[in-house]
Image (cartoon, rainbow, N blue to C red; front, side, top):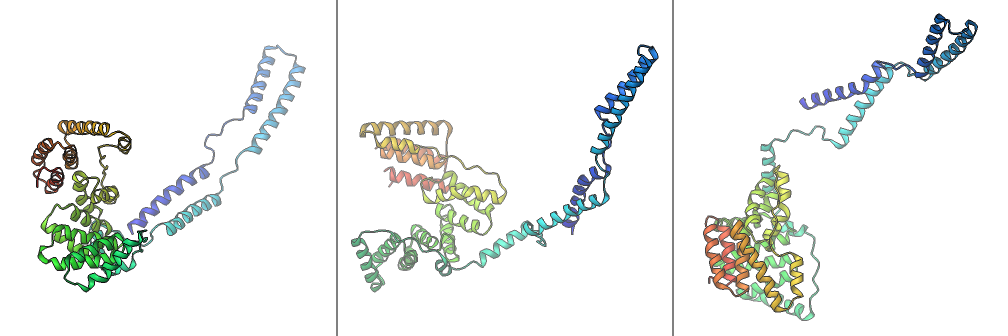
Length: 397
């Protein structure tokens, strides 16, 4: 009711602004310049007669001519003047304004739509999450991906796996191969089924990587949506590793898909800040986090990814091995100097560790690893990113 009262008041104000000029007409009409000119001439004739500077007969003849012109100018002014305001016109204008406003709101507004406070939105999101389709329904509704073009001998090998592996239900390596190659063939539902068998065979020995792979396949098979079954596995991952980048990404994706951009923003922020931008999870979070922030009503600017540009990489490919190495050393040196002076996220420290490893400078990689592990000791996700880089660089086993 309050909404309609406010709308009525605004409509009355708008109508009043439109009708007011029609009702009051011309408040201060401006005298026609021709009329003023001829009246001034008559006044000048009267002064000349008083001063006896003009012949009376000539003065009378001039007075008649000027008076004739004055009457003609006044008649023209009256003919071109505005008509008196019409009450009917004012009423018609108000009716048109009101009808246009109501019609516009009826077609593009939301008549009868109730207020939606924050608690109601959260409840609606919870209901959406609780009642979303299961994995099988999402897989059935997803658009089938394009079949990749593969060599005939590879396709023959995959067909052999598809035939042989189901006959060996306890062959763990066979099921792992089948899951991998079904994913390569983009038959994601089949890959999900094979990976489920892998998890069953591994039992309690299944690690986070195994479960993360399962979620990757399930979400891809479901057209990018996180099903209840995938959510259960994600929660298992986060229970064991609360700052796992894959678990955080998929949990954020679940809330983002169910109208909780605020929760998605909170989960994705550490991924964007500390995750390696080259990884799938960090790049996917970067692609969606600004929209999540917008939906949450939060002003958020995506941080820039600092490092070699695409142009730098293209230029390096044309150099000789020696020049390319020198160029890489120069960029690594710039990165090391900036991190030492300004600091940076864990992803950049990890990039520096990996770069020293590629250059064979394990001692420098070790120094950066030790320093960065102290700086980011409070963040498990950052330490995981740094440790992966250290392993790749040969610093830690």
